[in-house]
Length: 392
Image (cartoon, rainbow, N blue to C red; front, side, top):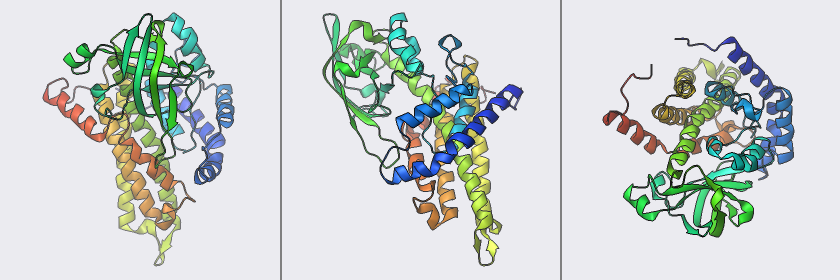
């Protein structure tokens, strides 16, 4: 058992940290100004420029297989990289990657969709959530009806990340209503790769946070048979795999943001003087700092354990739910304490704390709400699917 990063992992961590500090953090004032004016934090041109700089530094396809030109660093390193990048609110992501389920594509689909996505020539999104099917993913209503060599899709998906910019969507639809009902939603649904030019449209959904998800509308959209991703009627499993991967990554993002926010609070507490003393000397402030530090470290080990388990080829779904639940709530508690420590200034748009505050609130909702994670964790334990202490 080894509880420290290897020399190679530490080297990658330091390199990513240097990139974030040199290339991303100097853009924070610009991003804040754009956010105040209702503009995107970064333009697409600037994002591509930064991604190319990262590529020149050797960071391309962090967890993409080497056969597709990626670094294939593994999930633990993916978690570490995410923590480092999340120390800034600049909306950056490394290039050279694709959604995990897109690797289930056949050879022809890989040429048309996977490789162009990895190369940055195409943008994708994943769509499962519907107006009446958020946490209850088995309650989806979108249908796909066979018509010759095509499937006709009708329905709506909402809160789709990247849906406004995507060139194609991997969308889940019911392909066998009877089978879907008989299996309580676990079967009878299929994942389709659908190009925007096939007829679906997107509409932006304005939220309290900096991101703008989309509503995707399908009205008699015809999709060829060869655009089925994976197996016919096997879409529910793909959907869960996509969501499961995203869950522990939410925890990693929360950790990075919380570490940066806590450091801001520590620095501010040393400088801010009230009644003749820095507020860092006040017990109330010290306890908020201490509690935050403890919770960040606890979340970090939950996330790294979930990533490590996945690297071992083992089922990490239980750990992913734990990492998501604790990590997201930890992030919300930390940003709330940091805003409190900063007082009125923390509430202004001159500082990024209120932006992070709004973003953090979403962590407890998407990719499975707090309530869903608690249900999963309790069910696994009560039904004996997982034993206490089995992951040590």
